[in-house]
Image (tube, rainbow, N blue to C red; front, side, top):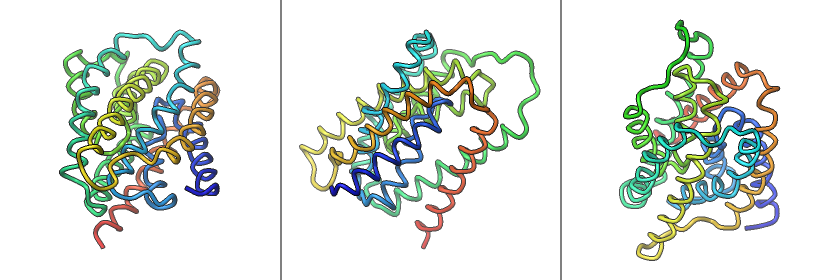
Length: 260
């Protein structure tokens, strides 16, 4: 990795974390397309590199939320019970079932397009109901398991999808964000470790790009801390719309590229 690539990774990690940490998203969901198209990470290695970003960047926002007394909650435990085993299964599927660049770009598009459209729709037309009630424990754990599998394939740890989904169900961002980021951090550690072990038994670029992952993660570490600190001061509606619009744009781009 060259110095210019490392600096670019640091800058992208910093910017994405500042914008996404306030709503419980690590930023990896948007950093992965940058790794594919700008930073030149190819093959299955892009997924564990993205997970490594989460491992390094995660503590920045988590430290801030812990100081505010928002980190430990029953919701955090429910997400971990589902996403931890799911991310291991997803990592195995990524290596043995979807290693090709074309199939992987299509998978990125399938995930980002509906997520972005859903975020925008829920923001512009919020549900008309009184006090938001959390889904059942079984529903949260089941959803976390499915998202953990997808997160292990995509390299986002799982919490980055769970956060927007739970917020869309009406739960307050202040409750969801710390739980989603804690889940992302824990599952990213498990996912990156799984890829590292698989690299010892398989061939090809399965292990993470350690230097680039660390460079992006250091940027995310700083950006995540400040993003979490800025949460009370940022307009939530604008953040949701920005995240949704970016997801739609990136999803459309990779859909076109994968179908050429």
